[in-house]
Structures are given as structure tokens and as C-alpha cells.
Amino acid sequence: MLRPNRTHEGLVALFLLGVLLFTPPLLALFNTATRVLGLPALYLYLFAAWAAVIVLAALTVERVTADANRLNDDQTAPPAGAGRDTEG
Image (cartoon, rainbow, N blue to C red):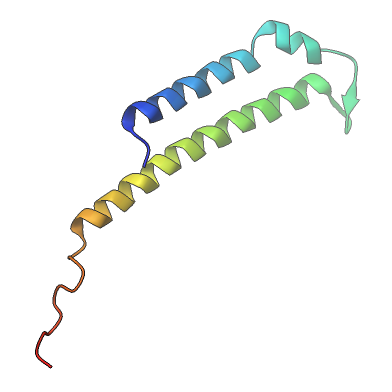
């Protein structure tokens, strides 16, 4: 399970990655007349970078939610052997 501050650090790092991906100097690298699959390179880069940020955010949040649900299930589950008839 991720610690809450570790999750926070991951989301901050994801934000900083998003800021870096969309800064003008990096965008200028793709602002050329080059076409990839008929699309301008800049458009393809923008959509790919945006999709990557969304997927990484979803994976980060989903992992935290799954860990929280697993922790809640472990706390509410009856102890091993509970409810078992001890008479033979």
C-alpha cells in the first residue's frame, strides 16, 4: 500500500511532468512542417502527451483506490477460522 505522502509526491511529480511536456521550448521542437500519418507532428505530440498524462493520473488514482479497498476488506474480514464448528 502506498503511504499517503508517497501518493501526494507521485501526483506532484505527475503535475510537474505535465508542465514540462507543455512548455513552449519543448513544443517548439515539434512545431515543424513534418507530418506523421498525415497529421502535423505538433498535433500528434499534443494528443499523445495529453493522453499519457491522463493514463498516468488514472493509474495513480486507481492504485490508491484499490489499495484502500483492500485495506478496508482486510479490516472487516472475520479472523481465519471464525465461525467454524469445533465439534467433530
